[in-house]
Image (tube, rainbow, N blue to C red; front, top):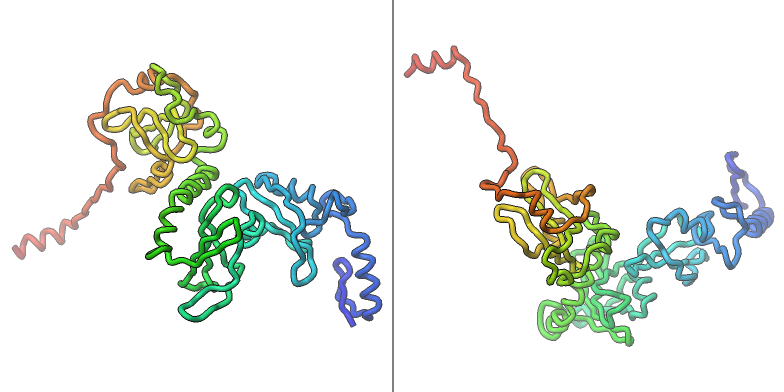
Length: 329
C-alpha cells in the first residue's frame, strides 16, 4: 500500500497498483511550473519543476553556463552541471530547488584526478569526496592544490597536488619535497586568488575594471586621465586611480598627509577599517577627469590628519557629597 496526497487534501492510502498508475501518468505529463511547457531534450527538467530556460532566467545574475547531464544520484534523479564565471561547477537534480557549489564535480569537469584514499602513517584510509577545496585556476593551470578536510568538523586535513595529466601526490606543504612543490606553485595560486577577489569586488565592479587602463599605459602622458575615486568618509584621505594591473595594483594620486603619485592596492582598500568600523568607499558620482583637475580640487596639503572624534567624558559631582568629603579633609 502507498499513501498519496492530492493537492491540499488529506493523505489517501491506495493500492500499489494504483500508485504505479498514478506515477506513470505523472511522469508522462510533467510540465515546467515557470512556463507550462512539457520537458524535452532541448528544454530538460534541470531542477524541481523547472526547465533549463526558466532556471537560467531565475538565476540570471549568476551567469551560469549549462554543462549538461552528469549522472544520476542514489534516488535516480538526473544530475545537471552548471559552470559559473569563476569556473566553479554547481550541480542540480530534477528534485533540487537550488544549485549547489561542488568542488568535487569542479575537479572532474576540468579534468583533474581526485584521490580516493590518503596515507595516515602506515595506514591507507578512504577520502570523503564531498569535502574538497581547491587552490588554483582549474581552467588554465596544469597543476593545482586540493585539500580534503576528511570529516565534517574535523581539525585535520590532507593536501594533494593534482595534475591534469592524471597524476596526484599527497604532500606535506610544511616540509621536504612537498614544501618545495608548494612554493613553486604558490605564485600561481596567489594570482588566482586575486582574480577571484577582484571578480567579486563591490568596491571595484566589473564596469570600473574594464574602464581603467592597464598599469604603465599612461606613463608618458603629461596629464593622465583619472577614472576612479576612493575615499575614507571620516577623514580627508582620498585615492584617485589612473591605472590598474587587472588584479590588485593601482597607480594614481593619493591625497593624504602628503599628497603624491604612487601605488596602492585593492586589497588594502577593501581590508581597511577605522576605529568606528568605517571602510573605504568609491565615489559613485565621480566623473573621469585629468590629473591636473583632480589636483585643483585639493589646493592645499592638510596640516593634520583628521581622526574620528574622541568620546568626551563628563563627571558629575554631588555638592553635598563633595562637602562631606571636604569636611573629612
